[in-house]
Amino acid sequence: MIRRNQKLLNAVNMILDAILIFCSYLLATYIRFDVMYGAAPALQLAWNAAFFRGAFFYTVALVGAFYAFRLYGSYRFQSQIRELSVIFLINAVGATAITAFLYVTRLADFSRLAIFFFFILSTVSVSLKRICLRALLRHFRKLGYNQKHVIVVGNGHFARQYMEDVKARPYLGFVVDGYVSKTEKPGMGLRLGEYEELESILEAHDTDELIVALEPHEIRFMGQVLACADKEGIKVCIIPFYNDYIPTHPTVDVMGRTKLINIRTTPLDNVLWQIVKRGVDIAGSLCLIVLTSPVMLAAAIGVRLSSPGPIIFRQERVGKDKKKFWMYKFRSMRVNAAENTAWSTDADPRKTRFGSFIRKYSIDELPQLFNVLKGEMSLVGPRPEIPFYVRHFKEEVPLYLVRQQVRPGMTGWAQVHGLRGDTSIEKRVEYDIWYIENWTLWLDIRILFMTAFGGMKNNEQIAR
Image 1 (cartoon, rainbow, N blue to C red):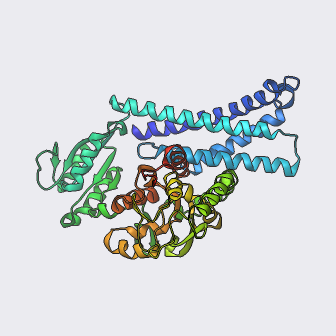
Image 2: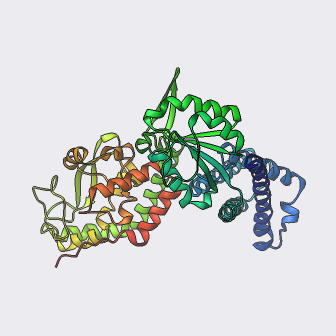
Image 3: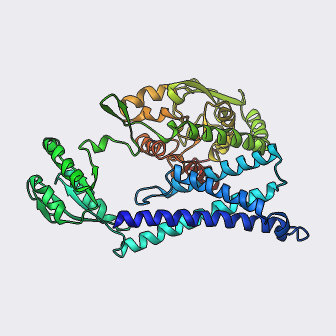
């Protein structure tokens, strides 16, 4: 039943997306030609058979791209942020491609403003529809509809953990009918039988999914369990006993008959996303250099007048793939011998009064925009550390060097949550690892907004 409903929902979802995209074309051209320029009605300029055919084929191509990027399927586990970011990216690429195609071929006169309106309207309408659809599905699942019935195989730690997670998330629509194990365990609900009875248990229940959570000493039953599930045509999900060592998004490579689980794959291993992130860094750093140039000029003058020494402070930091680079900052301290080993503190006597002011409002960080432009840093990412501390932290803090798999950033997930300066390095690494494993373009945009609206000012006191 669930599978039939899912196929119907996917078909309806595709049709609704196509209708919204085509209607976005109608509305965009109406706004461009009728609302903005009443003397040139859309009925004459854009609502004709030739343009309708073009809009139809473009709509089909866009929905096809949505399908290729797996936007039609079960939403139970899929991140909505990821879903919306993919919709935005596909629409942006589509709008750019159609603009370039019409400009080069000159097949028809077109309005770039109308295409821009079309991009905005189609992106917003499809995104809002999916937000509403997901909210509606979650509401009905809480009421007991659209449920997936599962049976858990095993009674160990991860079997119990799975049951607790399902119970805590009723909006996902999973119902555990019971568990199968060699022995009964209190507090786990209904025990349906032993592993040898699994085939008859599956025949007696209308099960949508089998969750296999065998303990290491029970691995000999795996073949039997999978054979029973395959015989009954039931989907199987496995919770490995090394679950705690697997990241959020692992990948599996195949070498002959051997499957290799890559536990350190990140979304930014994808070349397309690397290009997108780098493009945002280049465009963003150029814009911010222009916009903040008056502030940087004032800061440079202030630093020069505050104390003897250079305006720009260069410090060696460790970047992506453990490569060292020179990070730029406006000098906020008096020239000292401990600048490459000593961590600054709130009441640091080395800070000048003007330096403590630009540090409090993160103005001293603005020269790092040139590091971003050079490709040594990103606008968003884990903050880079000096080699002295990297050598210590990699021995003391688990997973510390995983941070070096991506470019360091001017701001990051840890920083917008208050973890900057003299704060817990363990907590900072925890936030950085989460960012790396769950990266999306929208997450970067969110962090930039959080930085701009509250994340630039820190708790440091201005020296008196």
